[in-house]
Length: 487
Ligand code: NAD
Image (cartoon, rainbow, N blue to C red; front, side, top):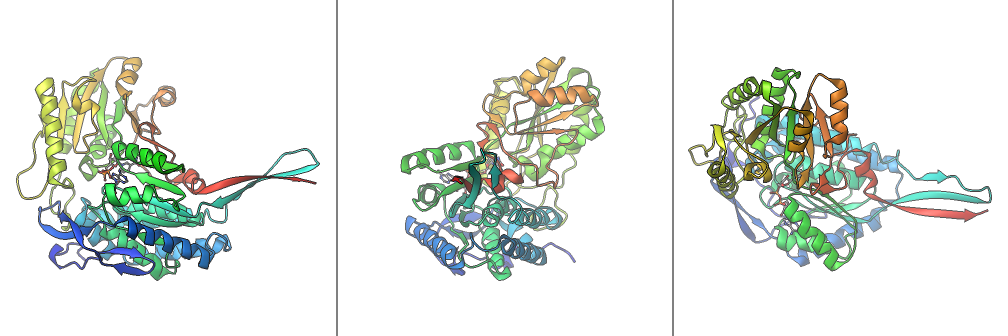
């Protein structure tokens, strides 16, 4: 069966999803398809009153269903049914995702959607496995650490991987016994609404997942500052993360998890398998056209092998197949918006105006869609805008080194520390450098997440606070209470 579809004939679940109802609201943000620039819908912006209604619905659902207090295995079972239904409905989900986001439909069924279902199953299994602890005390006491859900968690997600970002937030929060009010990006709201509808169809009690559509300043601010939202989980830019911290500080105090931006280095030593490294580095910057938090956007290579490595990457950059996200054979994504495409171009030009030399690409691709050519810039130093800024596009810089110390100094970024890649056959060097690299994730001789969801993800420096995925993300959705009983 072909996965290609006609984007003009897709019904959209357009509205807030509160309880088990889709609630229509006036459209305020014009949405354009990244693949051809055509306007196709207007996204509503939930007011503070709509957010209030979603939070009240979540609180009522927690009360009436006793979700936080049911036998944990019940939560596991119903979350697993949701994952099964997501797989059964993979085609409509993939189409909604491909319509508004930059994800090609051919990458979704075995990629983002399979991962979304697996991540839900992964967290479902934690519900009855992570409890509190009995702690050592003198024999006149019993000491224990109990854990409890927070109540209503507020979640905010970006546009670059809408479904899996929603799963990162919803699955651990629900497995841990909370309800959620989630705001997807205003640019990619529909697949998340459908995901929530599937949850109710799978048997997750209505009101535990509420989706409010809207922008950051109005809807996002209403969520993060809401007095009945006990915890905030955010993925997006460092700029918005910082605004969220300020709003939380202004309106009260609450825990937050922030997964923010990155500018991740890829270190390649002369002893590395260069074919493997070239493939991983090309995929690390071309996947989703570089619109990934962990995009490996800074190549740092030992001088003696720079030439063949760069040539192999340039060849792979030239082989991409751009196309509409609704055509199955497309393998290269558009940029999410005209504004973002122009920002990429401005940053590339600013780097070229200083010292950068363009080895390939360096311009938008012609046509109505927002495509940008895979770009490789040499001749840059640490002060180049192409090295400093998170470009969030298919732009790779290359710098060379002659010693480990030099490589580490180039890898260290003043702002970001999300991920890093390291290519070498020398195990001692790999371990030595892994210890010293300032990043929340280090991949050695690969550059991508695996499907081992037990590995948490999160940033050092201004790339974030706290972790998504792994045991950490489940525990971050429960608060702990210390109990000491005198016997
Ligand atoms: P963004 O920060 O512009 O928006 C993200 C979300 O935050 C959107 O839903 C937006 O409406 C909302 N938002 C914006 N301002 C807000 C505010 N003041 N209060 C509350 N909500 C607000 O980011 P984006 O352009 O959608 O996504 C790209 C960014 O996300 C990149 O910086 C990327 O690195 C980052 N990201 C990080 C991770 C990670 O795991 N660290 C994963 C994916 C994306």
